[in-house]
Image (cartoon, rainbow, N blue to C red; front, side, top):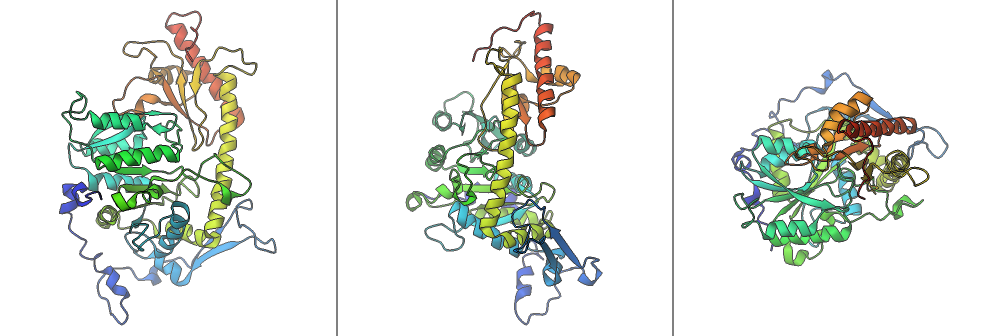
Length: 476
């Protein structure tokens, strides 16, 4: 049966009045209408005549048929539009190009009803902006949300601000565990850990190249999770900024790469029984175009997306118009095929960095080049994203039988001149853990080698301070 979407909205979202001005702005496009409505600045006061984009020589479509550099210019009425106050849910050009991309990649088509289901699309100042607002429109104080464990830490502070209870669900090599999810929900009213909590509204997951664990869920795993969400009436918050940084099934032809289907795409399966609206999906241009542009987008049931748009209307009005224009003009120039070729090239670059970092890990923290070195860490090679989630072999401490990476990183590693993210920050309960998150997105080979050497020295020093002359063998 369909999810009761209005019941998911928070009280603050239900109480939020519509913007008096923004609710009338669409009427300005009516032919023959003379508007005295909005306090828009006169464009003659804007100092910009054009914005010109010039692509790097190595980028998809950077040269024309004659080999000349391509420049994309935004001027005239298009520039005037994006320099002015714009639509709250996003610029019309970027909306149009994203609609094409979603249809191609996620097999969902807007506004045609069956079989895809009507969905709404909104553009924000990065997906983090949209996530932040989603928390506000969904959750009341003391509501509950399920999160994968470990979890992206940027999702947690706003939960705490809204006094929302987060319950961690354990993960495996494919991320969120369907069995752990089912076990948690089945025993919700009897388990000491959850029986005093409200039944959860939603599940939050980063299914591709997860931050921090680097795990990626297969299509079949997502089917399992979505089936459980439908059975228990839960919304899936699918945060997928690394979706296009997938290293699996790569070939010379970017258009033939097969990625795992998104939760949003999988909603089409069994839709005759369950309907649509169980998935709210978030994507970002930060990893594939520019982090500083701050352009992300969300798609999902209109009831929820429109609630986020209403919050935007009373907060920051809309995402940056020029940044949206840059993304929209580039996507229009490339077309969907060109966009996919570009993201394929970016993913290939990250794959090379992953392989480089993995070789250094094997040599320095693993079994060494000859395979005879005693390892002091274990890790799984990620198939997407930009992170290795490393379990260090550390001396036991009070309350941490496998060691505490926070102490080692904040004290020993810093002393030796290397920094990584201690694993405790990625758990709801801030537990002591031997894990650390390392990123291979920026580091060069020589620095990776030196950084891991310093990390090894920090681990060895921790064992020495704990009274061990030799590091005990690691259970692998």
